[in-house]
Image (cartoon, rainbow, N blue to C red):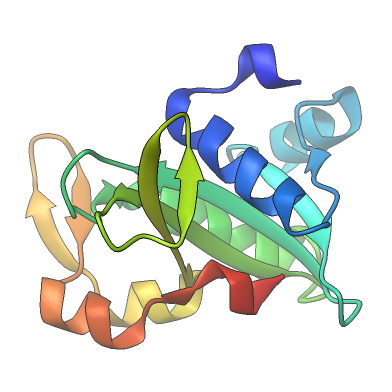
Amino acid sequence: MLHSLNGFERIFFAFVRSRGVELQSTNTPEWKALAKRHHVKVPDFGYVTRGGVETLVDVKGSETRDNYVKAKDVDDLSLWRADVTGGAYAVFFAFVHPADDGSFEYEGRRYRIRGLDVAVYRSLMKERSPKWKTVCIPRAAFDGHAIPFENLL
């Protein structure tokens, strides 16, 4: 699975595996069929938390502390929770950022990996770029609501 992941997805994958949680690829015919039927994008990963909660996660990252995403990603992940899974799954964004004080080291660099429930993200988001159809959360609000992803495993 690692060969098909982008850099931030690789970091997230390594982080979760290092914590003893098994990620499931959503890049399968079954997940793709569900996405096609509901006209939504497929999230990056699925996993079951230590507490037994089925969870979907879409990984975002940047070399800066940006937290912008495509507005459609927020819409699609919201639909996964409400319609596709009937509310049975928790759905999060995982934000991966390089940080000197980050808790996870990968290939010689430290990273901070934080999560934000898609419903919380939606409630705080502001338009970032109408041209690119992106949204973001003001940094202070993001810092106040995003939690270490360790707490979501």
